[in-house]
Image 1 (cartoon, rainbow, N blue to C red):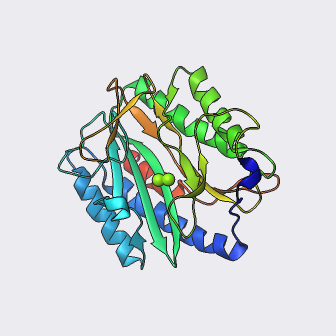
Image 2 (tube, rainbow, N blue to C red):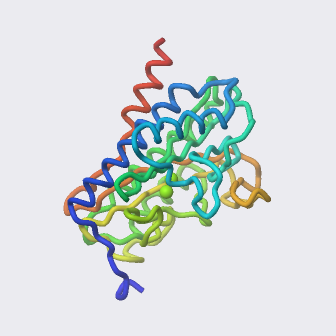
Length: 266
Ligand code: MG
Ligand code: MG
């Protein structure tokens, strides 16, 4: 339906406002990075994030979205995405995906990072690394004139080459005044298929990559998505503006990774 797709481009003023929200997500995730460790509950991470967002004059995007009860999605090990923060105590060796959204001045920021807690098995560290790398492979394709399928193909071919699998049931998305806008951005696809990318489109690219098979189950809590084979899954998300020659990444992991470095180096 490429012919009828409204390309949903944003003005530079709107992009400036989205960047502001995105920056706050980065700083909120850095607060999470600061406190995440074995012995802490996922609910504690949520409280830290919510307080930080409110203190900064914004609101959590996820809380109340279709009834979601929390500020963060915290998805541990075999949880793929949409985990509800609760009394689970984070353990050494866990991999924890944290997804955060904020709305400020009417525009949303939304992105995610997967944390390795303490001594994580090397094969799961590799899953995390390849998932993150696949995100950048996808971002490279987010240029004017390309297609949505080019992004998905880049992600899928990269992770499958390394023996991992792509979750199909959930996808990336456009973002702006709404948390989820058109177009959908699957993490699999065929080159030169799907909607055409146009300069000024703002999209969230968010590979959800499984260590084992791609199949997932939806839990009874109405939210948590888990791998069917109970093997771990990783998730990274960036917000990107489609540009003429090179995609512009408007989210940043800088603050998160500074906190991680600080903890490692004492
Ligand atoms: Mg998203
Ligand atoms: Mg997200």
